[in-house]
Length: 287
Image (cartoon, rainbow, N blue to C red; front, side, top):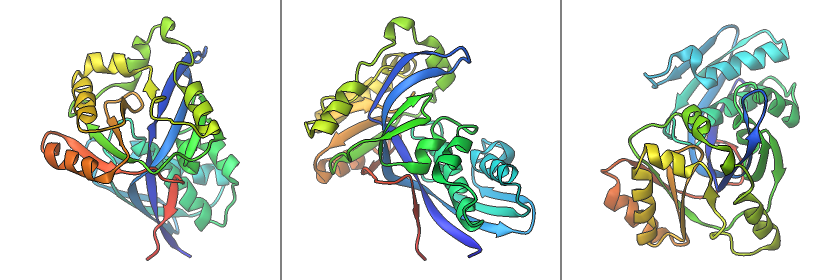
């Protein structure tokens, strides 16, 4: 096998709490993360030498793209000769709180590991992945996971129900660094995650447990977040919350029809999509 085509699934944070701050400057989080069906698509091909990334992302130099950096990291860590050609089709929006770049990096690590006869186990790949970003380890595994530490300490949780997620990304962008730097110590603590973990483990209703401690800060920067949350609830969403540091808002529906109708009504305003929970972070595309 000389090439492989994979889907790099995005993720949402069903909850996000910040417990404190490490001396390194990173924040200690506790979050229930969930993979979604919406995914970027990557074809990864073996090459005799060099790295070639084809991606239509004009705002990001090729060598700064996480997919390119993931390939560099893989070959350096594996000590292997050879190279790769990567063709990236973006479906996940950039800087949206949906781990699009992290998912691409995870997919490249996973695909190269398979093409080059699995020099790394999944835990070894995840340890490597943390060098690229806190969400990359999650994206390698995916499903419904409890993420702790800086997001690299992962524990499996029971899968969530068959929901329809409406994702709405307001047009303004948000700096993740700015959001975390604005967070004050009185916001530290487990406000949402423990309740959701308990509800999942006990098989109880979970839609009342979603929440994100960063949402008030991000909403102060992008007021549309509150507007879209309200619109989603008015349209019948069981819950609505922000993912990651934003600005993407998630509406949780139990039926597909109102979810699709919401997107049909509002899609001219900004990027939005309907998607579902997904059980893995990376899936192979059979051709």
